[in-house]
Image 1 (cartoon, one colour):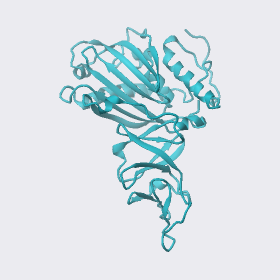
Image 2 (image 1 turned 120 degrees about the horizontal axis):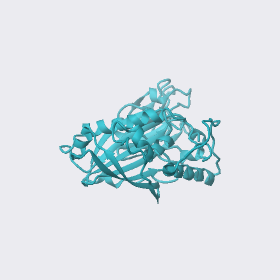
Image 3 (image 1 turned 180 degrees about the vertical axis):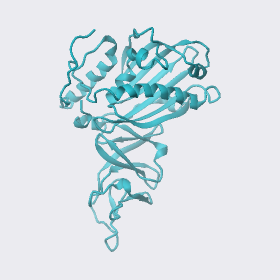
Image 4 (image 1 turned 90 degrees about the vertical axis):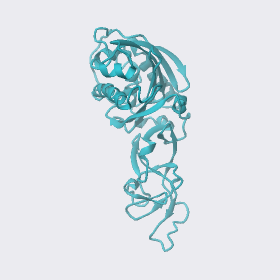
Length: 345
């Protein structure tokens, strides 16, 4: 599926930038191959416009802010947060008249993240009640571009079969490659996957968990937020809860912008944030190395790749996305299929 070619995917909220990075400077972002400029208006409200002046197409993100409006660096045409031109300095009174504007997009802030929808969204930003629960602390982990599509990232997040291989240096148990079967339940955002997975504990993780055991069980409750984000809630036998939010926005068919933060049910003195980030970063770098080596076009049609039973969560994602396309009169658009041979388990 080529995400930039599927129009219905424009009708979702996508996490584009952490809120604290949207300060007094315009920020460029590309969402589904659409160039945006993000900034705060005079009231501090996050705004998103097309990153092109309607005069000579200069990038507004190269300009500057003036009283909460964005100024084009080419001729100084100035736009408010709703996209309307409010000043043309070449005119004697600066009055642009009526009807001069650039395209503006829906923009909201939630969970410390700025979200943008390119067209009327099909559903709201999913609920994350733990974010405002005083029993959890919030730890920012990273904001970066991955050379991988969102669907590959999401499938990997729900794949129990790769732990023993991809994560053999962090938490995977190489001697036990047979994965724990997942259990899926429908959810308004997509679905929730449950699994109780044995993992090993390197020294840094023993300290993070406050345990001395070489192994433990992770009780997973992972929620897929259609199309390309997830909530991974891990509950450990000692009652500790570790929630990782991996929020993914498609830049284009090949790249994704990823925001990750975690919510923890303990305190800084129990496990320093720097140690939590260090371990989670090791895990995500292991994932990134593999995902960036996979094909960027993830087929929804199930006959274009081989599958095994524990691929169930990824197959459900593909099924639900194919259903979404069909409901909106679209067919899957993809690149020519590669050939990697036949057979399978």
